[in-house]
Length: 484
Image 1: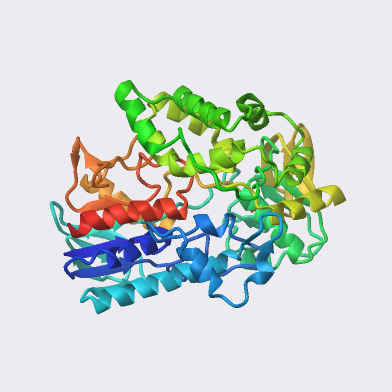
Image 2: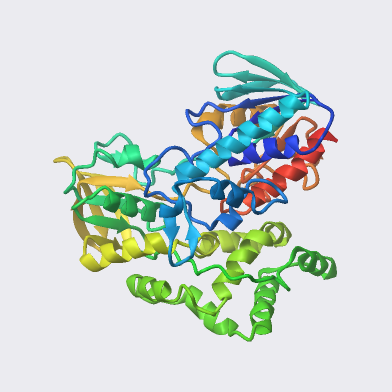
């Protein structure tokens, strides 16, 4: 079996690790990725120390079935104690260090595969096209290589932020913020920095500017002005109702709707003797962002488990629930509740929340909701229109999340070739339709025999980024399919 893996980020690492564990008859594996930081993807490339992993170690393992894999790697590192988040009681390393973990895991998997007789190669180039179908393909790279494969896996990760205000090319505009060490390093110390958005990427930018000693004002420019939720200290909990087997049973009885999920969450909290309505009111509440941030920081040790349970449910049951929901519910959640779901699935760590609150209290950071226009100013800098008032900023950094189901620009030639040949299709709501059992693209009702999709490019994946254990579990299933 000749396997081609297009993409060497976290999904590609998880697949290599899973393939190494199959014990299958050896074949060949070729990995393609044109990034200068192979194995790290967009989030985990070398960057500023201030850019921390936004989740505790117990939910960051990239090895399927081994939730302590990253924790053991972390315990072997001699210089990470300084990254302790005291409020969580957890070590939260810079994302570049998690990238080290991914890279070491990939290299260990390759060594294990080669020792078992597999031929494994890594091509540091983008795949731009292919030829063939029906069980085999020849992948073409930007360097002119031609590599025959029997099975090809699209593990290309997410795309880049969109330039909603048409500012690309304007002096002082940064569309892709990462790595922040490069994009923020040359900003004048007293420049007024406008950050488009107020989510986790905006938090990363503000925290990094503060760590750099930036003295100028910082403005979060967004429609809503809301900030992410704050993580609570981990507590050992078990989902008793929002479980995959319960969802399957509900689907067989007549279907799963958003109302079904709400009632299952209500049952989770009632079993713990806690008030569902109070928790629901907090999610949709209109509390001032700074006040909510201050309160949530004070409640990191709260015995109220609503947000903890919902974060767990989004990660554990969310992928299955999403596939079972009717399209109307999926559209409603994607269009009306994207920010809340994204924030609850990846809440802000207290370490960053304290820095942001300090910046807000000092007046250096301000939230500017109601933004309708941002345009470059002829005299330099940018004009921001928010709430009917014009303001000037010197630099604008885009912190808006890439849209769901988008791919990196470097992969567009391959995606276009796949679409043109009929090897894949695109669903109207976004993403490539795939067969649930094999993860193979479905075109005109039939799965393709050559390609497979791993990660959020699949149309049945959630619109938020899949967490590492979720990617690892998906990779393990796919590894079994590829080597069967």
